Image (cartoon, rainbow, N blue to C red; front, side):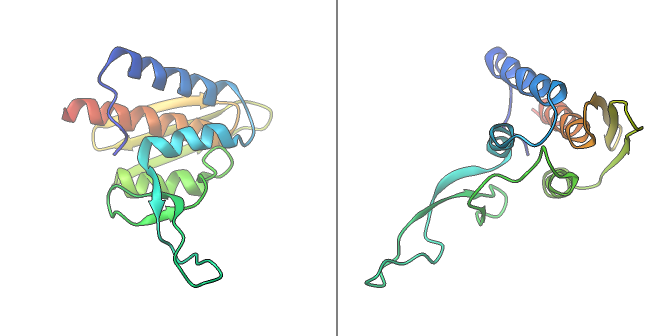
Length: 146
């Protein structure tokens, strides 16, 4: 699940991130990294890299808190690919459904639903609309569960 946002500064931090996602366009590695940090841990692991003597060398990678397995050495491309967002929804909010409307020359709108909870968001690209709706829904569900 998304990192909990229970204090006012954290809530403001998530709000600022959502605003940046909604109001900008295109792929953005910095935003992707911030989103990645909401769901995954950044830590050192031995993933098979060895030095010339055959000794293992730790690598810094993203680790899933659900499985404790490393998932990537770089952030997923959330702002550039719907596939990464859908994968995160399936992993962190199973049974979530979503829809996108992306008319030509107009902002895209995404609707994300999990049970009775849902969020709709509009952004300049389909990826960003879906990502903001997903983040807002994940935060809402986390708050209600707390």
